[in-house]
Image (cartoon, rainbow, N blue to C red):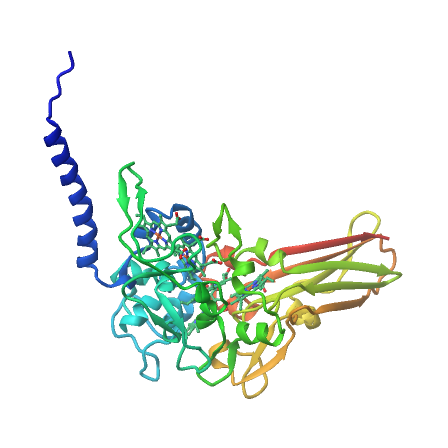
Length: 404
Ligand code: HEC
Ligand code: HEC
Ligand code: HEC
Ligand code: HEC
Ligand code: HEC
């Protein structure tokens, strides 16, 4: 017959002991790491596995000079090493880049980003989920982490699924029930509002006072009231998607354009429509799009195109970009710009015709292509050896063809 090896008392004691270990483990993390903005994303990811994966593949999860090769190359040349303490700008100030690209380090005034995961992870879970109130980011002196008031006692969230400050029990990855060690507070007015994004995405001027990024004002001027989240954090599997795609993901860029081609005789009209609440392309001033038009003869051979190698040199009107210039009006990299040159990006809702008169005979097919590029040719040339080849390749966003 089955004989119990432990008495009921012993079992109760063992259970209490196990529970106390779970609780003391939680208390230990809380005590040895009292700062909420030092919690690594993996700690949140142990329960929020799907969101963790989405975030880890996003540019937020790769926003520091240690992980983003393009930002890294510029940061190193403008500021210095991301693995040293006490790095300063040429004017002797704390590197402003970190306010947005490594906000947890910025809150501590640190520059050695490999000192802890919460620094090297850049825009991580707690960088956003400790934000309590938006103070406004207009002035250049209040960017990124300086644009917010933070909570150091509770995780902030939208309060869709979890409100109040009670702790919840959830099944841990090993099947044992765990207690969420982080109390939560509801801030739906911040987390469901564009304000949460604008602290870092509103606009930024370079050291010479020239606005280099203006996603916030673009949306405001368009009079559009949809939130950033409605496009950038759609619901997937019942919760807000944290992949937060943009220019690094051609599939996202595709969602922003309608592309058409109409040919009448030798006249070809390519129409590009921006369906977004901000410019296309928006964001970093390097981003650019180019229309390519190709004419084929009956045997499928290319007999004409609007450019062969470089749209920038051969057909500038096909380029959509914010051109930043120096005193002499010539294009310069963003940190050196003293003026805005031409801004040929598509405004919110804008529909633009690119009109071509194809100057050859015997055209049997016309094909239009739309490309998106993270960087323009001069900067590509400069960074060619410092960044991976895939970041230098234009992405094909749309195609339209007509047989004559
Ligand atoms: C032990 C498991 C566990 C851990 C660890 C954990 N959470 Fe949660 N969290 C939950 C549960 C359970 C909910 C309730 C909603 C649900 O079922 O997904 C929740 C809800 C949330 C919400 C939504 C709150 C709202 O207002 O709707 C946010 C935001 C959140 N967690 C962020 C975090 C962050 C950031 C971390 C890391 C600092 C973290 N969580 C760590 C279990 C956990
Ligand atoms: C703490 C600052 C901060 C906040 C808050 C923030 N972002 Fe970002 N975001 C960044 C930084 C920095 C990058 C650039 C990372 C890089 O490319 O190195 C970025 C990149 C992006 C990108 C571009 C991805 C790509 O493919 O290049 C999108 C889209 C984006 N953020 C959307 C949002 C949205 C939507 C919100 C609000 C829900 C938001 N961000 C809140 C700092 C922030
Ligand atoms: C760039 C800022 C940002 C980062 C980084 C970020 N979140 Fe969020 N998170 C948000 C916003 C904004 C919402 C609310 C979205 C909404 O409701 O439309 C949200 C919602 C959530 C929710 C509630 C989801 C739902 O729909 O119920 C959870 C849970 C959560 N985040 C966990 C995390 C975890 C875990 C990480 C890190 C792996 C993380 N977040 C990183 C901004 C961020
Ligand atoms: C109507 C949908 C929609 C809304 C609303 C929207 N976006 Fe976008 N966003 C897109 C699409 C699609 C792209 C890709 C095309 C592009 O780069 O313009 C994009 C691109 C971006 C990028 C990438 C830029 C880069 O350099 O890679 C950033 C940053 C961004 N959006 C931020 C925001 C912010 C901040 C808001 C709110 C103020 C916002 N977006 C509102 C759809 C939207
Ligand atoms: C106000 C917040 C903010 C500050 C300050 C800031 N950035 Fe950014 N940066 C962003 C955001 C947001 C993006 C990505 C979305 C976009 O294109 O607007 C970005 C994108 C970039 C990119 C493009 C990265 C890529 O992967 O293509 C580079 C390079 C960059 N920043 C360099 C810098 C440098 C260098 C500094 C400091 C001199 C700096 N940034 C300061 C917010 C900021």
